[in-house]
Every structure is written in structure tokens, then in C-alpha cells.
Length: 240
Image (cartoon, rainbow, N blue to C red; front, side):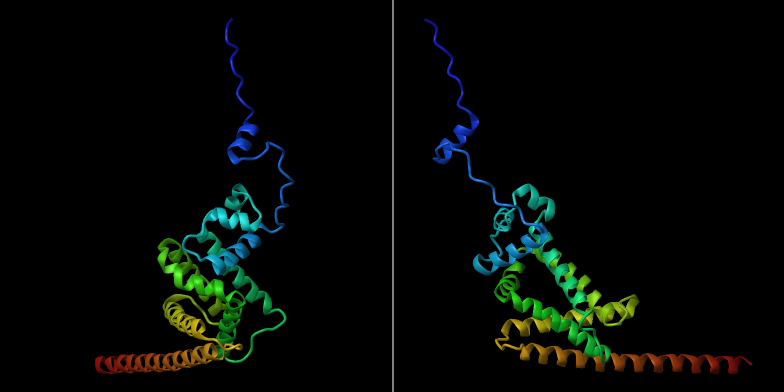
């Protein structure tokens, strides 16, 4: 008698057998979050605070956010993209806060206010951001992406404070603000006070130093322009 060919087991049964399951249909899938981007940003911060950044995978973030990989990748294709999204979300929150609490005072006062609003946001997820601060340099691609976004965010802070970030002067102002923010970031990492008093003091000191330097540079440029005009007049007089 000819042997009857053995039919392959249904794929679902095979999958269940590999997992040690019973082959019964799985329970209802958890509903996807209404805002996938916000869910992924929150999941990244939560996981950074509990298990670190360096070895965190996109799949782990997607699972914690309640998303499958297809939806997660369509929202943020990489961990670097989530970091950039975090910074942009902070930018948006700061700008939105100005509707009810607008800036006032001098340009120094306005920059101080904007920078402290940013540190207040970091403080809300302090453990996660401290982890990023310590571990992000160990992942250079993500660190580079965050560095580029930091420049864009601080450029926005200058413009929001009513200070032009265009041209050579704007470039120098941005470089100065980056140095101030990094000094503030180091102070914030060590600041255990409830009101971030040490961070505020560092930011205020650095902004004061920058204001003095800017005044000195402006005065030097004005003197140079006057000397140039006087030299031009003297040359015309000699030619006549």
C-alpha cells in the first residue's frame, strides 16, 4: 500500500508549538495610542530612566509605547529620530507657554527665562535626561543628531528672545549661547536643589559675562569704524 503524504501542520499551530502555546487564538490586541509620536517619546524617556540608553532597542521602545514595529518605524525610524523629536517637542512646549506667560525685560532677561524653561522640562524627567547626558557620547551617530538639533533649538531661542541669529554676528551669538547652555547643563546635572538655584546662578553668571563681552566687541567695532572714517577723510584731504 502506498504511503499517504503527511500534510503540513497549519502555520498557526506550528507557531504556537514553537512558543509552547496551545494554539488557541491570542487575546485582543492592546489598542494603539492616539498619538504614536508622543507615546514613543514618553516610552524612550521611561526606559532610559530604568534601563539606560546605550543598549535600548527600537523594538523595546515600540513595545513600551504600545505599537508594532511597522507603526513605530513609520513614526520614528531610528532612536536618533526620537531624540530629535523630543527636543522639538520641548521647543514647541516652550513657545506655547509664551501665550500665557510672555517674555519681558532685557534681551539677557528673555534668554535667561527661555533657558530656564528648557531646564524645567529636563527636570520633569531628570533620571532619563541624566542617563542620556552620560551615555549618549557612547553612541556617536545619535549624539551627532542631537548636537545638530541642539544648535537649531538654541538658534530658535535667540530668535524668540528678539536677537537675530543671522550672519556673522548671529553665528557668534549662537556659539556663545551654546557655551552658556552647556555650562548650564553641567550645573543642572550637579544641582540637587528643588528650585534649581545653582543652575539659575550659573546661567545668570554666564549670560552676564556674554553681555559684557558683547558690549566690549560693539565698542571695539565702533572705534574701528570711526578710525576708518577719519583715515578716509585724512586721505581725501591729502589728495586735495
